[in-house]
Amino acid sequence: MGMKLRWIQQEDSIWRVKMGRVSEESGSLSLDREALQGWLKALEQAKIAGIRALVIEGEPGTFCQGMDLSSRLLNHPTPPAEASSRDEVHEVEAHYTPVPGMLRALRVTVPVDHATAQALRDDAKRYASLLLSLRRAPFAVIALVDGEVMAGGVGIMAAADLVLATGTSRFGLPEASLGLLPAMVLPILRERISAQKARWWTMRSASIGTATAHQWGLIDEVCADVDAMEKACREALRMILRAHPDAIADMKLRLGDETQGPLDGALEEAAEYTAHCLMLPDRVEGIRSFLEGEPLPWHERLRRRP
Image 1 (cartoon, rainbow, N blue to C red):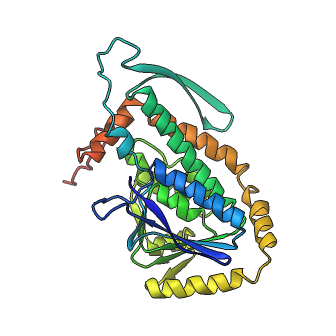
Image 2 (tube, rainbow, N blue to C red):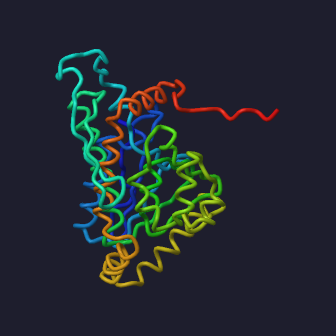
């Protein structure tokens, strides 16, 4: 397991949840199946309770490192490439839409067993459901960021109504370097930054600092330190509590899908696309190499100028 959720405030109309490592020995703060299920359960619990605001935070130095692929791709054997039995290397027909209205169907050889392939698809759909639940929550969502935010963690942060971050935080979308795309993050991200910025950030597979993130609109306020961030959070909560709860819920629904079309359809398509990429042999082997500290075959170094 890479993450556990812990309620640090769960009373009155303001709840607060912390994403933490399962243990001190766990170096990752990532979203595995248990964490995704825990998130969905927590959001449903908050919705039933009728809260007015949810505050999300990570650990000092790390907010969230995205989806946990290592537990799926490193803990399952790879079927032999020369296998002749369909029970050893499975062929499936993969459907996804690279652009709206264009359905692509391919027969691909899956480099993982059926159970792992299905688990990857289920995790992608759980993550898409998490983003949709955060984005459409009938209460205000505030993200407090102090440190690294990577990949799927960017989606959780961007789905918040207010993002406060310390000046030392950094934000990364490294998926393209692994042969993937932050496909499920992009529909949420596009509500905060321009299409051009999203394209360039994704192409580079590089992290950006707080100043750039603020300039782009990814975060709403830069705070000098954690104490200043807490003060800004309390001020925001004071303003939120002045509004009628139904007004906040109605406003979020009204503004949610006007600019990009239905968000649930975009996230569903993105989940299918992500699951498809995670079944392509070169992508799986590349990610495995990355997780094991090996170079990826498609990485190239820029030549030095003479």
